Image (cartoon, rainbow, N blue to C red; front, side, top):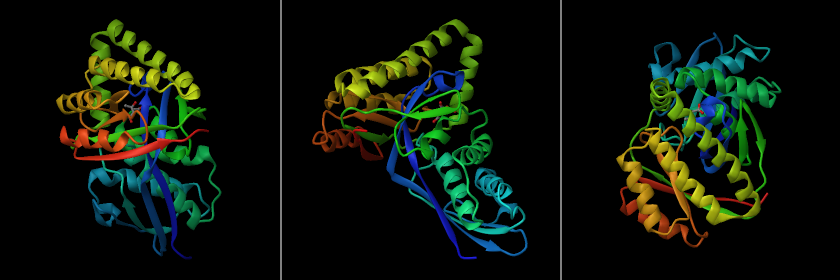
Length: 310
Ligand code: MEV
């Protein structure tokens, strides 16, 4: 047995975060520049030894937040014909944690792929997704599966009810991601929306319906290369997410800064209450100035990504 590797990229949600938890459609894009890579080699006695930025040592002594990692490894092993194999698992990731960029799902996907390579198991897309969902359940509690589908797809996707399809993009769109520098817990944000919905069902269902409509509208804008319309829908989605109480002052500041810097659209992305903003640049040439404006407004980091025609 030689060490085997698996990798997965980060994602950004363009439309439909939170609404997806209630069955609404969502749209997500891959972030190929940020990746998680898992390297596994066999250990004799069924032990699981982890080597990651957050923790190194025996999985049995790992802190709670490492649990998704060992869950993914064990779930992937269970699908192989060597379920009792011991593993040394080395994880390296450039995806920041708790920023709504899908780091936990990407880590689980990378682990599933690495374990499959090591054990020479053919994992179907559904099997990889199943491993991710087991790890996500530990990381986030209730999850729509949107992150898991998005990190496993090389193309932008439309997601609904657990399933994803690749979508058509009629012109390149350049986005700038800006990290507020504040951690956002998806499970806390999802729980807060659930409580808000229990308290104000009509109002919250109305917001979810409008977020769902923006997801559907955006498919036409993406296919038609309609950048201004796409951007306007992003600003509107951000206003609705703010009403859903998942924004915060640092995200508001970044969205306002993007608008002042001429972005066609901007919104929080992922669970919110910390995490990142995604802004639509006027063109690839506009993106560096937009990134500078976001950094001046307090962004800890920015990344640029272009969704190509497909
Ligand atoms: C988190 O990236 C996306 C949410 O919609 C949660 C989920 O879909 O499970 C907030």
